[in-house]
Amino acid sequence: MVPLVTGDRRASSSLTPSTLRTIESRWNWTSDSRVSRSPSSPRGGFWSGTAGAYEPCEGWHSDFVRLGIISDIHGNRIALQAVLADGHARGVDGWWALGDLVAMGPDPVATAELLAATPGLIATRGNTERYVLTRDRPPPHPHHVRADPSLLDRLVEVEASFSWTRGALSACGWLDWLGALPLEVRLDLDDRTRVLGVHASPGRDDGEGITPDRPEEALAAALAGADADIVVAGHTHRATDRKVGGIRAVNPGSVSNPVTDELRAGYVIVHSDPSGHRVEHRRVDYELGAFLDRLRESGHPGHEHLAAMFRRGG
Image (cartoon, one colour):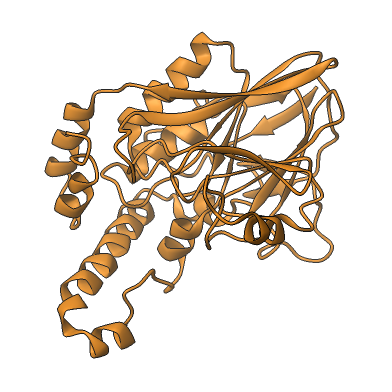
């Protein structure tokens, strides 16, 4: 078996050594951070809280795997808890969390704690992790405001939102954990199917990503060079399952911050054994009213804008 530690013992005073467990990984996986790793650093590894870095590990194949894949949690701990509970009830024995984990929501620290404490969970980074860790920001940018001064309030809100999240995570010691997340994670299923997990598309944490209606030629170009049979990516918050150029493109939808009238949390389960595999899309109800109360009480500077995302289905 392969030891896997998904948390940092220094990360938060509310986590104890008994909470941050050594997990026995039951599949063959590798991570690829592309930006942060040096040319000599290992392609495969596990997060070591002791070393504060990804460390090399050997692969392992299980006789049966149920892998839950989530994305775009956006600091919604309540929805995340519901999804993890649903997966547990269905025998999920490992998780991928494909970026946009903590920003643009009321509970960045509690969400990071829950992810780090979940057995068998491997997290990757998305574009909002980059916004939290750097000075990069989504639009509007200053040149947009100069062209259209009505965008000033939105620019100020965007800056305040990511600064608020960074401050919360920094105060509780979670920035190192966030900064060490890889860009991609890979898995070889027992039927030899190669699976790639990434936030938006191979090698990218943003862009047009995987959607049901992206033109086939454009999506095929985005997936080119993936070196995988299945590419799973979030980012667009739109559940998708389509075949393009010999590659199955899957989007699990979002756990939070919906962009359609479907307000339930979305995720997928990859079921695998030596005879084959299947991908199951799931939707999970959670206490939306409790989440909106938490959002309002959190002091998040963008709480009104975020709450509006959950009213389109009402």
